[in-house]
View 1 (tube, rainbow, N blue to C red):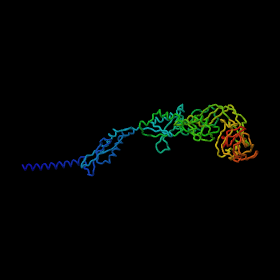
View 2: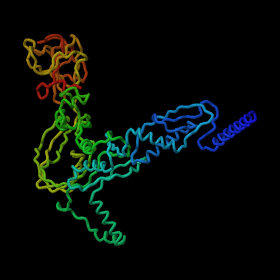
View 3: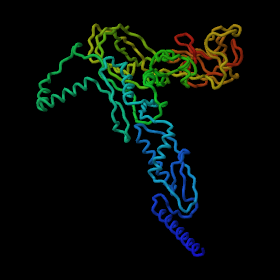
View 4: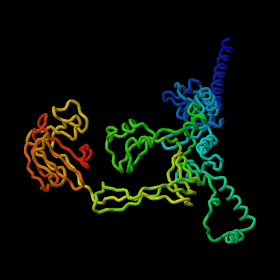
Length: 526
C-alpha cells in the first residue's frame, strides 16, 4: 500500500507540473492574453455612452479608436453626422489579462455612436447680403432666390443669375454674376464664326461693316432694359446646418424682395421745407423730427446743404438697372439770371415770365429698385421751344442783424396776444426782453438814425434805416444816446433800456420792418 501511495503522489506532482507548463505555454500562445506589469490599474474596461466597447491595456489609445470610429460613421452618410460621445473606463490591477483587438473595439464604438446620433447636419448654403443672412438647402434654391429678385424688373426674362467664385477672396466664397441672354447668344455666334471662317474672315467682315456715323432716328433705338445688376454684394458659402436652421425658399424670397424701411441721408436743397421733405420721402413729419436730433419742431430752421436722416423703402437685395425709354413731355427752360451789383442778394425782380415747351426724347434712365437715380438724354427733338424765365438779382451780401441787448428774458413774442396793457395793441409787432432800467442797447445792424426821441406809446425810441431797406426800432428807452441823421455801426451803444411810454415794466421793445411792415425779428437775428 505504501508503494502504491508513493507512486500516486509522484504521478500527481507530475500532472500538476504538466498542467502548469501547459497553462504557461497557452498564455504565451494565445494572442489576447498578456502578462501585465504590476503598476496599479493595468487593464481597463472601456465604455462609450454607457455601452461596453472593449477591454484595453493602454487607455491612451481609446481616443484614437474613437476618432477612427467617427470617421467610419461619417463615411457611411453623404451628410455630416452629429453624435454624442462620452468615453469612460473602469481599471483594475491583474497579473494576466485578456484585451480586445483594436478592430473589435472600433466596430463596437461605431455601434455605440450610431445609437446616440443627435442630429444629421445637412449640406446647405448661407447667403449673406450686407447684414442680412439666410440659409437655404441647395444651390438651386440660392439661384431661385436671386432670380426672384430681378424678375420684377425683367418681365421678358432676358437676364439670369449665376454663381461664380469670388477671385478677391482667399477662401471658397461664391458671389453673383448676371448675364443677359443676348450676350450669351452673341458669344456663341462669335465662337461659331471664329471656328468656321477663321480670324481673318471675322476681321474682314468687321471692316466691311464700318460706315460713317449718322444721326439716329427715333426708330433706330432699341428701347427696353439695357443692363441689370445687383446693387449689394452677395456672398454665398457652403455650410452644414440642422433642419430647423434652414429657411423655406418661399419665405426667403419674401424676406429678400419685399421693401424694408432703411435709413438714408437726405441733403437739403434750395426751396425745401420740413413738410416738403417729409412728403417727398413719404414719411410723417413727426417721424422726420423724431429721427433728427437737430430738429426741435416743425418750425425749426433748415439750410441748404444740411443733411437729414430719412427712411426709404428698399428690399434687402437692391437691383440697379438702366432702361432706354422714349417719351414726350412738356419741359421748362432753365432760368436766366441777370446780375445787379447795386442790389443785395435778397432782392430780385422777374423781367420775363416763362412758358413751357414740348419735346420728344430718347433717354437712358438709371434706377435703383423703383427710384430714378439719373437720366441721360440721347436724342431730343423740340416740338416748340420753352420760353425761359428771366430774373434780375442782386449780388451784394445783405447786412446781418444781432440781438440788441446782452441777456434779458423774452417776456412777449411777435404776433397776437391776450390781455395786453391798457392802451397797447392786441397784435404785438415786435419782441420784448425784460431787463433792468439802464441796460445798454446796441444797434442791431449798421445804418442811419431816422428818429431819436419821444414816440408816444413807444416812450423814448430810436429808429435806424439800413442799407437793405429794412428798419429797426428800439422802444421804451430811459435815455437816447444818438441823434437823427447819425451813422451807427453794428453793436454800437445807442441808448439805455427803460420803462417809458405804454409799458408793463422795465424792458426793451424791438422791431424789424420790411417795406414798412413789421416782421418777426427772431427770423432775422443771427
